[in-house]
Length: 239
Image 1: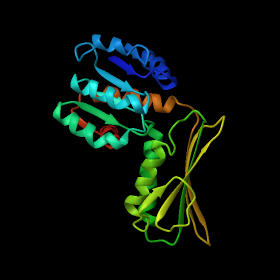
Image 2: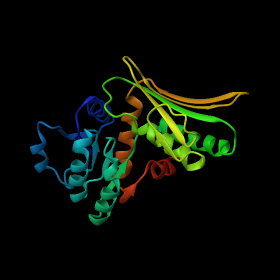
Image 3: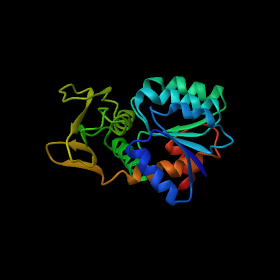
Image 4: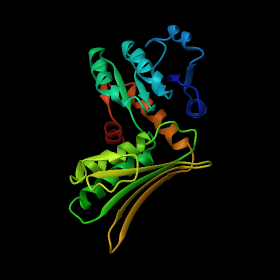
């Protein structure tokens, strides 16, 4: 499979290493310094693209792929205010893309567990807090993963109306506490507390490898798909 990497930071380099080890060909490694090299690529020499760049570059990169019918797996966060626009653009161009706040299979199982627990706790008398810990070079706060977790809770716990990225005493707000320290594995915690007990679920990523392997697996799947896809679509095809 011929893969184009859009963004060649730590994640892009790891995807390069793991994809090559699986027998895939990395046909291009695009970053801000060599974007002019994109002109040589199209759907005849690229099977799928994997996008891990920066928020300010992601929308342009996604549109570039969609215009050329190159399926693209997008892991960059921080651009989601444009998501409705990109969904419409994808459909208008008969393209294919999948955005995931986190490509790790383990994290996506954690998303499901989070929603299941929220559904069970919806009418219970517990306070809810969420917390994330990441390395200091992570630019967005809260992370896309934290936002996905918060949205999963809000979907079922109707007493919560919105999330905030700070401590709060407002019963209608779900707090997300973001910590940035070094060194730090990516950690996400959901805590339900009451005077009688505490329920906690937690996911800790020990390396970036789970994210990279997930992104490669999604790219392999996307090359035979059409339209706006989600991790739920991908997981349903796998399990």
